Structure formats: C-alpha cells, structure tokens
Length: 165
Length: 303
Image (cartoon, rainbow over all chains, first blue to last red; front, side, top):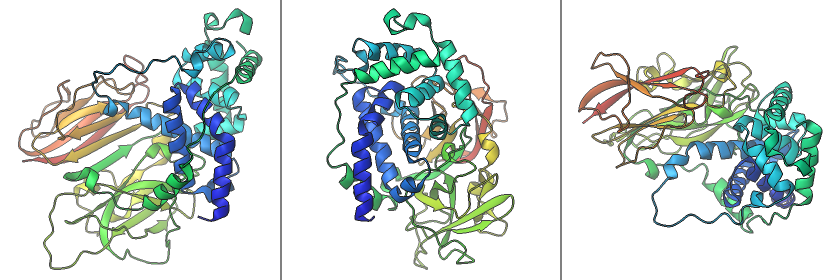
C-alpha cells in the first residue's frame, strides 16, 4: 500500500475514531468492547483502503463494516462465554451511565429493537444522512425513513426525561 | 417523540460529550500486518476437520461489499484452473448483495492432502449466474497424502462485474468436474449464493453453518442463527440464540420424522449418517417465525 494511503488512513482514523466508538457505544456496547469493534472494522477497511476511499460514500462504508463487525461478533458471543471466579468490571465508567442528555439518550435507545436502535444511532448520533444510513445498514432509503418513523413511535415516553423534551 | 426532539436530544448529548478514547498508536502497523497475513492459508486452527460447509441466507444488499483486500484475479485470462480442484462456500452471505463485487469464501481442496496455496480464480460471467472456479496448488504426484479433511481457507474473490441478480455457482461442481459428485456439490447446493437468499430483511434470517470435525461424537449446538456440529471437547449448553427458537434434526438411517435436538446435544452412533438439521429462523424466542426455515443436509461418517 502506498504511503499516501497510509497517511490517508491515519488521518481518517484520527478524525473518525471518537465518532465510531461513540456509535458503537450507543448501539449497545460497553466502551472497551466498542473500541475493539472499531479497531476490527478499521483493520478490515485498511485491507482495501484505496477502494474504500474511492467509494462514493466512504463514511457509510466504514460504518457498514462497523455494524457488520459488531453483529457478527455478537452472533458468535456464546463461544466466548466462560465461567470465572472473577467479578466483572464495575460499570462506573460506562459512558452512557452519566446523567443528563447522554443518559436520556441511552435510556431512549435501550428500549428499542436492534433494528430501530441502529437506524436512530446512525442517523442521529453518527449524524449520517438518510442515504448514508441506508448504505450503512444495507437497506433502501425508504426503509430508513420507515424505520426511523416506527422507532420514534415506539419510544416509551417514560424513557424521556421531562427536561429533555 | 418526534424527529426534532430526538435531534435536540442527540445534539445535547454530543455537547455533553466527554468520551475519552484514542485510537491505538500501533493501529496502522497492525493493519499492515493483518493485510500481509490475510492471504495465508490457515489450517492449524481447524486441524482435524473433515469439512466445513456454510450455507446461508441473508438480509442485506451490501452496497460496497466486504472491503477485504484481494489483488485483482486473473479473470478471463485462463480457461481452466492451473492447480488441483477445490470447492468453496461463501464465508458470510449476509455481506452479499446486487452490487457486490468482492466477497470472502472458504476454500477446500477436493482431494486428499493439505489445502496449500490458492490459485487465482477463473470466473465466467453468464446471464443468470457467475461461475467461480478455484483451485489449489498441485501436490507432488505419487505421494500418498492423509485424508484428514480440509478446513476452509479464506480467500477473497474479486468480480469484474457486480453480482446483479445472478447466482454464484461453484465451478468445481459443474458437470464433468472431479468434485461434481462429491458431498461438497451434492449435499451442499452448488449455488453458493442466490439473490433470493436476500429476500428477507429479518436480521435473524442469517446463516446456518455446519462444521464437521473428526471425532467419535458429533454434537449439535445452536448459536443465534448458526449451528455447529462439534467434537471438540465438552461445550456447555447455552440457551438458543435470539434467532433460532428450536433446532430439529432427522437421520435418514433412522427413517423418522424430525425431532428436536436435545439440550444435551446430539450424539451420533458410529456409522454412516445422512443428517438433516432444520433451523426455524425466528424474530426471537417465542417470536414470529417470519424468517422461514433453513434446512441443511450433510453426510457424516462417525468412526
């Protein structure tokens, strides 16, 4: 791979890392797991970085790989389940457990189905366009619109704090 | 809640954002190493396997395909593969769609002996199908090789044209080819992927996988849309994944209707079996089985 591509890749990582991790967190992963998923997705994208860059919607492409990476890993999750005498890490550092709008947003998303959650996170947290969200999820733009509509309709008002409304 | 309210909430969440995370400093170096190692044949991890078959149906039309790196193949430059025949299956059917131009496969040498290096594919583009013929490096003639089976070796196939409504067919299964009558082409559909596989948008309509491993007992374990037959030591039973409410099986040798696979796993007696596993793909446990049914039939020899 050319040095220029390496530089572009490094620049992309520097610019998008936080956003990608945040997206994975709001999709439902704890931060360490979210960082792992983002790393894995970026490593996969690097293999053909020139093609990723050449894509019309490179951002959507990377988010798509991230979503797929996470879904695939979670589908295999039980393989990794092992008994342990160690207590799990405490969740005090959970990014989404903070108070305020972050916590409100987390509560709202937590009650949704995976499909609905993904479409809202990509559209409103990752701030992708409808077209980018459609590309990232591998669905039609119309499907994005209908999922957003249904997701919003299915949000339990009790999950939204009064001050957030 | 409406769109505006959610936008406001997301914006406020962003303004509060104090997420502390940085990319690993060695990410680029690891990416380089991973790219270099991608095309190596991986055999050790699945030593002892007899065959790997992955059959799947998927939900998405991936607009970009999987961005795995594969040097452009010598498509159309040769009429026949240079090496020994090998069969393949799609690694993750969920990543295929009409516009896909590259995808990952698992390649298995047809004859006895180790997989070895994989040759560039010969790809034929037809109106209704794309035929991909893969081959592996020729083995030294006159040598008797162990028939321990071939774990699927990952390989990235690059197409010159998008799939665009066509079936992906394993060229090793074409009539007259050495592997055409083998289990890899008869028990497993030579059409490795079809656009109709993506007919559902149900995320639970995923892949079904059968992994046959050498050993006396074969156990069936479900995993959220996957089924694994494994003889690799004790594996604790866990609850069914969210996408498979119940697994059923049928053995031709017993000539009975399908039965639920017991929670303790399915143990086959020594002998030759033709095993069918059925996987209702549902929206969730007790949910609506809108995904339909995946049925996988394979031949298993238990010694």
